[in-house]
Length: 290
Image 1 (tube, rainbow, N blue to C red):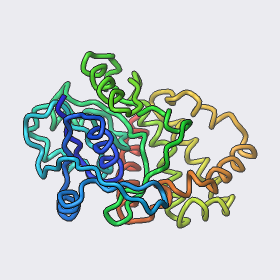
Image 2: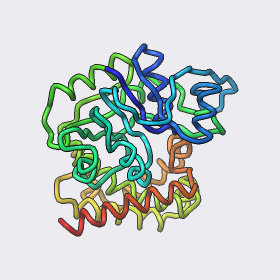
Image 3: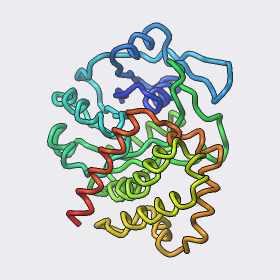
Image 4: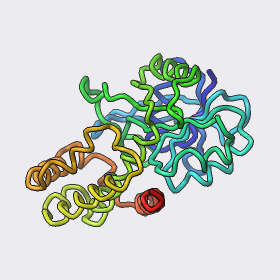
């Protein structure tokens, strides 16, 4: 399978590097300064605060030319429209790996009906200049599988093939039959969480404001209740059953944790605000329609 990773930020760079090191036929699409950096140095990776930087010579391209079997799109939600324009003549299947609550239809209108798959990346980190700083290997968290699925929930031969290719490269992956509902559930809690952390200046600061955490939790509950389908995974339904007095301290403890502080919740860049705004708009349209 010839693969194209469309998007050279944290998720795309990590995914392309892992696929390349496993021997997969993969190219990474980038533009501008990021493209020039990748051409000179390859994908530069470092574990968290480690001074050791290694270089992975992933092939890079500037355009989504034909000849690829699959493109994995790893850009932010508000950047998808621009990517869709570049994929208008793309001949392969397209796996969208990012926050997305609008369903497959607007993607299929450009890419083509039956050629879209949905998913969510299971990797994370931050950009430090042109170095991708990622979490150190962990035998527990590394078992968290990247969910991917067909928009209609079927288990198709192409889905099974993609899962096999990713797993063979060491990317823990699973077929998720309710992928569209999974993404909408994720948006229902990630928009209040992301906006609250952004407003506070990061997760640690948010943790110190119990009223803000309580307001965030109530928005999560409202969003989940307004979804047209039950939450996926099912345990998210418990957010409406566990008392606030129990959940608020748990959320504050999470927000103070190393995991939260080193996550994308600490990113207060304009790009984060733009992504949250786009995702919130999708969620609003979804809940109003329901």
